[in-house]
Image 1 (cartoon, rainbow, N blue to C red):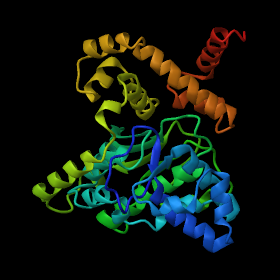
Image 2 (spheres, helix red, strand yellow; image 1 turned 90 degrees about the vertical axis):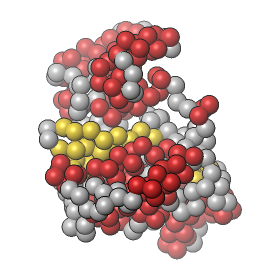
Image 3 (cartoon, rainbow, N blue to C red; image 1 turned 180 degrees about the vertical axis):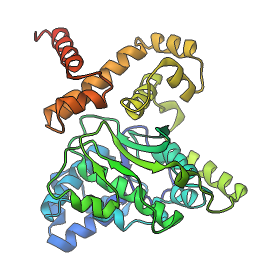
Image 4 (cartoon, rainbow, N blue to C red; image 1 turned 120 degrees about the vertical axis):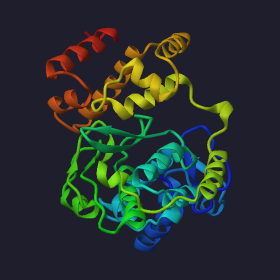
Length: 340
């Protein structure tokens, strides 16, 4: 998750982040190694870009630089440790809007709604499961892998700003990561103050409903309305907004394995009718069933290809009944590719 101390102009619709968000990371690597310019050059970046408060850089370069930085400074938990140091103000007007929220649920709803004003190509959402509230964060492009540092940084930031705004003792019930368990995973549990599960279908914070809905402050509706208008103006240009297919794929990534992905559920989220959603998807040459299968295939190949988790767990996280159903699906994909 990007930081944005000088968020003033619109984000482009492509997957990118503010160049200035790299500055704390660049400064840290420089202090530790004195050779940050070489690392920047290896990833097509220049230190001078960090000084342009309005510039953006491709998300892929940011993700790759973050991973390389962790290796260079020899700290596999660099992302999580940097997330610990964040404040709501580091997120710019979105962080301020978050801090003014009357409840934790409202704060995470706003963070989900406006995340693309911070960085493009990102899906975030809030839903309920088994009486708890679940906040999700995921980069949409499966090719952006590995992305462990950004995942751990983003969820550490989410925990840190929640503590800053809703109580120093707050902790989630569980934290989920899509990547495989690293060595020394207990370090993450200490940082996040919660049980941590790996090889999941997405990155999530599981929050107790009572914590999510407990009132903490009255809301200044006039001030929050001004901030929401300002943040909305910073979101990607509307003429380059995601297609319906992209929006549905983002929702599938948020819900699959945790909530039924049906026409009714997706249509309600997009504030349309199931019939209209079905017709509009057909106009784009796809169906909800095809999109679910596309996402399942992407995630299965990602997790199994990188050894992130067992076949049994991948089947469960993708909503399959068991590993046999997953095996049949993979056989079907191979036949479609002419590999069977």
